[in-house]
Image (cartoon, rainbow, N blue to C red):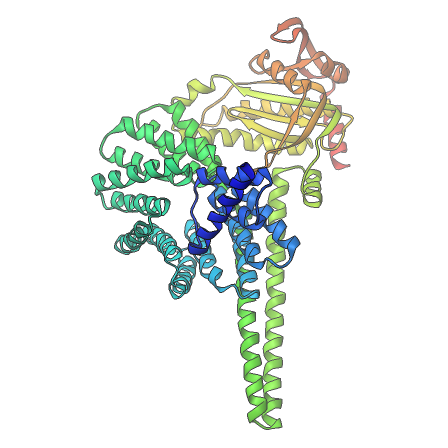
Length: 617
């Protein structure tokens, strides 16, 4: 009975697909189709994978099924249309994740395949998707070119649903260039088509985007009606990406109407959805809105929290390496397109001249062609040099984020395996009364103060060949003895800690109105750790183990202006520094631990020379 039902269900979907060739996201439909696929009972696997991919609302799920579709279509070798559709959906998934470089790469590849296999009905849709991506990046001139080509191609095909989708995206573009009358014309036409087709999710998008236009025109009642109706429909379809955007616009409207309670509620709803579904641009916008709201009401701690969240999300979206990759891929695509057009034109011209003109005219043409090819080769060589320079810049940026050995492993194998280091020293720093000091400064000035100290700490870490791990609020974490082992790892990290104290004390003597003068304490522990990369969307090098936990405890039980170390660290450096024995102190979850304060060096001149010589090596 179940098998028979599955065959009927898929057959009906196939018939419907023949009549309507484009779909929007519908999570309820996606969940039903996934159950069919997992049952293994279906007639057309590629069609089913395509339907699942276009119905998903979660970017990760879109990418998963798009990649499955690409793999299956590639292995079969005769399913070019599904291969093109697979790359189109891969681009859609990456775009929702905010990975615009990867999205453009997928779209451009899909265009090349569609042109190669003469699948003309896909080219218009792909140009709209490319234009939409450039519009998101605020490159409106390039976006305008692709939108116009895409809409013209779709109008010629008489496909109402695709035309409505293209008009919807073009209206979005006019919205962001503040051409609101044009935006309303496009969106009203799209809404009318979606309504005639009884296509709820497209109708919801058109409603919501019209609500955004009304909000910019300060027609707040019409805006709220449109936005709330769109949200209600989209919730029933489990399509959360636009809901996050529409909640943010409701929050802005609430703020303009002095409805502060709903402004906070709608901004928080927008952020919750954006973070849950990894929507980086929406995370950036919602965090900024919450920062402004909390700052306006004098809640400095909450304002700082959302300001830091905003900075992190903004940097992820604006990542320089991604921008360079986008420029490189766009450049390659344009060069390939122009080269293809030039080759076709030259071929046609040459054939005509061979038939009409004499040998002398043909020789002149060959000379001209040779000159064109020479200039074209020069252009290609120049372009390749530019690409190589940009690649070098990207590699340099990556090496500033991760250890060089880790970067090389990541580039070679695409992943990094965790490694154990048996002899490492770990340091934590902490500023006294950070929270109370923060209340007297604006969030921007507080971040600027932290940057002042941490930037100098970075120089000290580089001087003693340590590895910066991360900053946690007002805490700075680094390690010695990795990624390359060092016999004197404990000595180096203690010398670095002493130099950090010197800088903090020196900074107190410099008068600057908007910078905090901190007191600091430091904790150090030595022993084994495990190191590796965490995260799949934004890499971070980190370390784990009891040694890390002990270093954190040493910092907690340290004193102002003091370097507190464990007994094991003391045994490694006891001949080179002066100490005060603190005896055994009870530590939460660790029991009693012996601790020592570092009071100075036994022979400071000798120690400085020894470290300097090791640095030169």
